[in-house]
Image 1: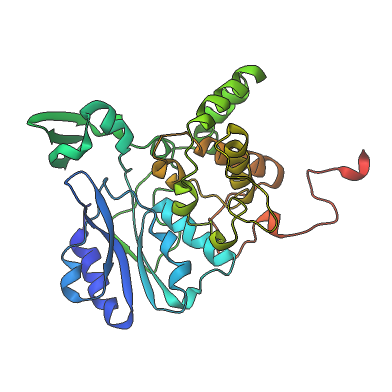
Image 2: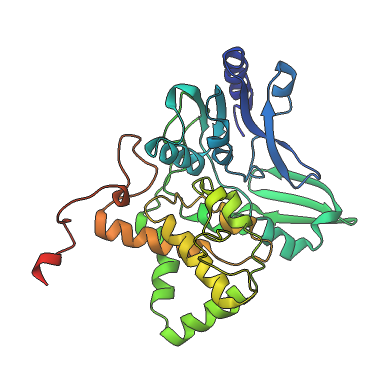
Length: 319
């Protein structure tokens, strides 16, 4: 990241007034970054901000409510912070936001398909438009564009939409809402039988680990999740595609009008199920019916958290 030095200085000045600042640092190998909790001045020097910093750190905020917390955010992360503020799940006065412009993050799955066993990574260097990965004695020079997460190719909000401090220059983009939903439109046009078969095959691979739920910054009712509730008993724990599919559908409905498409659910999935497609479908419908996008305006109220006798585009009384 350009101006990482500026970001570190901004954090250094704010840290005495904060309990913790959440950023990223090097992980268990050179290819992986990991969340980093900065509490002391020397922790700031370990801060890392680059295309390997994939985690949406907003996931930690609800659990830290009541503390003074700083958080480093890219565009999609900041939208999650805005959504948490809208739903009164965090307090604005207690959160200091350090934003920056993001040029995209890597998709570890794409790298793994090219490199192979990511457990044998010797080094990883991001330089300009290339990612150079050394694994098991072999060097792989990958165009960054080929291994970026799909969400980044059509990102409309690469800069933090809300911040107290902004490091570096803003990133420009020409992406439109329609660009971001071409995959949804293409899937919608397929025959029903083909779509049904696709999801049967994908959901049959689900292991019900709930990593998608746990990584989601807006899934805040984990202690009362329908997937594990016994009173009422919504879903069984059977390893049947029916229950797996039902969980994912409920998950998507609970995020309708709330999902910021950060992609953490899909990134966290250990079997690479494309479950972000579910969430994007719901967001597409929310946009068409309510003209609303999640996580943009801190003063807005998500449409499914409001009530109107008659919505502008829902003409129930005329039926």
